[in-house]
Image (cartoon, rainbow, N blue to C red; front, side, top):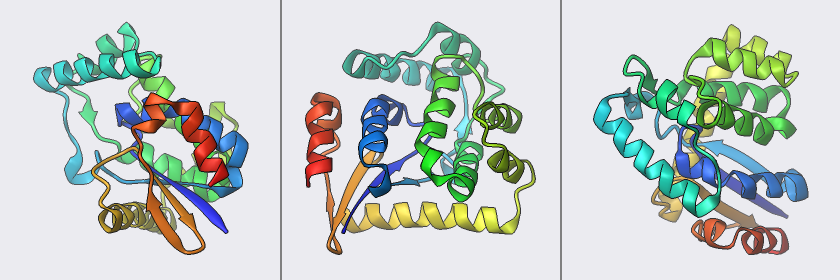
Length: 211
């Protein structure tokens, strides 16, 4: 038995950069893939969007675009990074993805891609619940949207459990951040070299599927 855990945060630019790799893994070995949000930029990890942080984020984003080809639009820069009233908080998007996980788990990677695209290309504030609801409904994920619109204890418990599992894996295997890929085979877990997902994505996908 084999399982591949993908540890991520929906506001992590490098996780967005790994999007094509995740999409390939979901298409070719989706039954073996499990997404686990780490909550890196939620809760205590959330912060206001100020000028210094916006400048740092944009510089980092340009590096990601050069390396991966994933686009970061000028609209994202003006409508997201340069809006100081917005929070840099992945909590709402993480809950939205947990709602998808509970109602249509086979589409969670697709929902993550849409949430990332909304921010980095369309320049939408994907920390806002109304934006997330529109995205889910646009994908036909109406059950997930209903859960997000009225989050109950079961949804929040599942969300906390997923983040706890991600953080436990990171501690156990010494992962330094996200994105991280953990391969579990016959009960043994191995932290994969995530940098290979950027330097040679096709080879990385092939390695994951063949392991």
